Length: 325
Image 1 (spheres, one colour):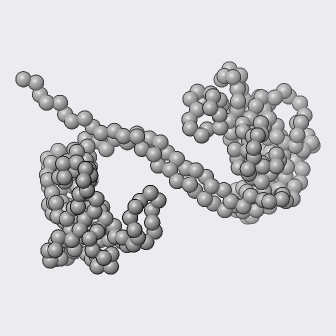
Image 2 (cartoon, rainbow, N blue to C red):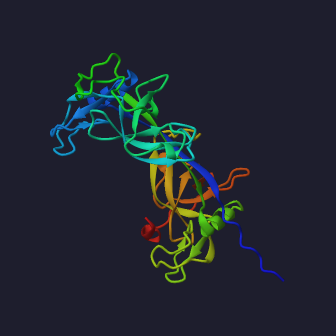
Image 3 (tube, rainbow, N blue to C red):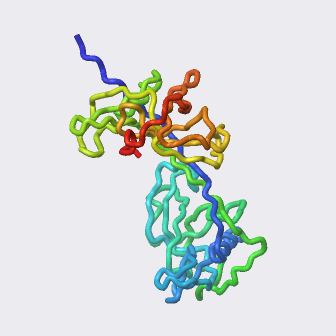
């Protein structure tokens, strides 16, 4: 007779993404607008150094700096790393090198991509130039990438005798940007939470008890956060519980079909020593209170409770849940 195989630990691809919107100060506005116009601007610090990309505050004195200068679109690679497998929305869709380039006239280096046939074609000290994007909007992506070039004078930008002063004035300046932040990853909840999730699909809530302090954690974490020992003794809790704390949500979330305002609460299920999160429904938002007794509501085919509603029982005494707030 063979032993039963342990249940498979769950894994799922997840994506976290959001657009980050920010306004631009005069220096960053001039820099990005300049890229749109095919001009690379830097800023001169109090000690005379030229920083590209520019910053608005001196890294030494922390004072505002506004002296803009134009630098060349050619420069020198100071260090590099080969990227064999480009990822989504990276500058190039073929293998390329990440490079730090000190543009002629600048004292700091700019990070971008270098289009090269292979790592053998890249070296520290090589000369490169900007390859401008075909369509430019006022973003760092207006530099499509760098490309190798022969030693010699720049074919665009200021002369070799140094960076040229620039007033930063352009028509229709860029005043704000939207940066798309995205993280793709594979998440595994682990042994304990896999069992918890599988039980939820059967409309049961299962936690784990610490063998030392005997607290029951829901959702289980696989180990007791107080004692630091593994938890393997599974305990079914609930289904009813008590609202310990709550908040009223007044801002509608994207892709969430719930009318505002609504209440999101910490709920201590009967038999659990850790409160979990859940939405409260079936009661006006302004009547939700600490101590309210609630029970889960499941939808057809749902793998977890849609929300919790009042059970109709008297409110729990504060002493019964005060340690779980």
